[in-house]
Length: 376
Image 1: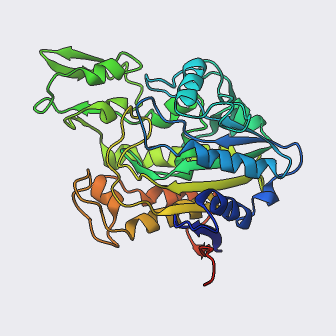
Image 2: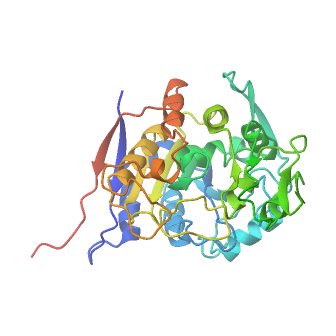
């Protein structure tokens, strides 16, 4: 079975600007087929951490909202609270960060922000999935309560999954705090003491207070560690390591099983969009953005969450790497950029497993929108 994935590049003309082109992409990919009048429609995005600048531009999200409203559906913007300590770890701070980053009520065409798992990340719905790693998953209740779901993901690199796209935006992004902890629970980091400089960044950002300095070196109390992996992201010297071969495959599988929970009551009511812009090496959860590893590629839309991530990875890997970025190997067109960033991560495992459990297919038909221009 092959899924259709629709693609637009970022070329604009006097006949059609990028916002108009995005509207045409969404229409062509069939967003009308998942919506009906008065559908409460969750638009799942990542608002970006304070200080991050790689997240999707609000003006594009506004265009997507307007496309949903044209079908008489009722959209709301949503994301779930973070497990780590940051500016989106509770509902109030989360909304404040979203507004600061440009997702205000007025800029979003009078569309409200509703945090999916509530004030403190505890508003959740337990969903039965009966899979290898998870019998049940815990999803933000407002995602489950919505009639339809539109995922809008910023496709980029990621420290544990290799890349983050639709499947991470849903599997991790829609999980409640308990759910995020469940997904991360087998990720057990260790400190490489020889290279640790005792900066205490890991200690400062550890949500479970499992890290402290001992003799000017970081130490992790494994009894307190919840496996959120925030210390890995924060360490400036790469001194925090994971047993990649044993833990990351399970992490990826759990994240795919959480996708099953998110989409369980959304059969033929879910639509997926990936923005391949500002393709940074790490997640938008960081309070800064590193240089993009390749040039902007474009935007994809599909009703298959596996196919759209596969197509995104392929399109990024077809690019030539930009100079002077975090990507130091696999620089040529056709070489695996995500393996270049994170050689220990088998990012394809998540797509194989997602296909195996019925989330979608890795086989796709790429349909490219032609750029409209005036004929001379």
